Length: 407
Image (cartoon, rainbow, N blue to C red):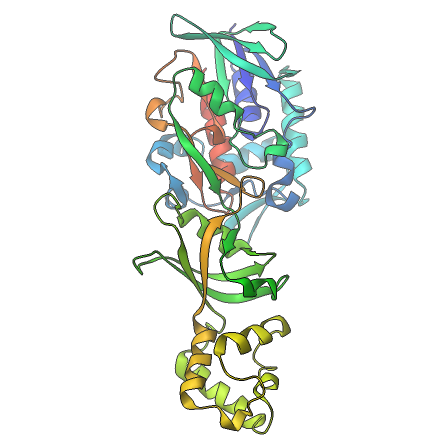
């Protein structure tokens, strides 16, 4: 019987522990928090979107960082197997819009409950402590040094500490330091799936506004369109948030570009000509009113004053005095409301971490280190990240399953 030490009690670590124990190993999870799965409990706004019920190619298409590296482990333990896996553990699941898999109860705590129950069934031991370093002898991992210097020996070690996102849950990048001390290269971590900071000051006036059924396009400094989407966003205190925005954030690299241009189409269902006719009808309706009072039917309250300023049309100009050129500029605002994106919000708001342990130094067939023998990786500590929709948790579970069986 081997002694397996798993550093980190998140989704990847727990699945790894269950699988390692199922193969007659003596398994220990070393978790710094008072309880396991702290970050799991906040995923999907507390509902836990555990995966996406779709074929492997759909998952690969939604993985932004190193999809080829993940192919074999996703092929072995895909979304369909994950669905069966949790069902066998007693968790009732359902498939929602976009093929997203959720617990039927809509409670992340139920996902954690069945995992903890299985850990107990498999006699996995939980140690609440902090790992200072992995002990290496003759280029082999042989144990760990804990917070106050205690040594815990082990035959196999799995690093599943997570990345840097939501550091209050324990994912504070400490796992990267452990891997680096073992000789691994760390691809510089950056926030992924996060809100975007804007240069324009007018967004403070529209703070709290939620826009639905909105078109979005993102352009780099060369004017090339690099991303487009349709859906929801929210204007907050100096930044943009919401499903479309956090997805768009995965396409932005501020190491390469100082800023990006984001264009919103507030009326995507109408082409320019149709929207122009709509505006003309409203202008006819409010013909003798001031321009400031003519936008009530077209815009939410928080955007009306913004549009008046951006259009450069005098707010006290009567509608019947507005020129065709001025109307065309107004039309452009509806179809191409432009914002300059200067940065991403940090790790405190980021859903995932981009960067991490260089996958070139990890065997994709076993997730064992190519640098240090008997050392394995699982989850977000690796340089892997995907779009929203359950793909990131699938990576965590699949890599945990692979590492747990490999040891």
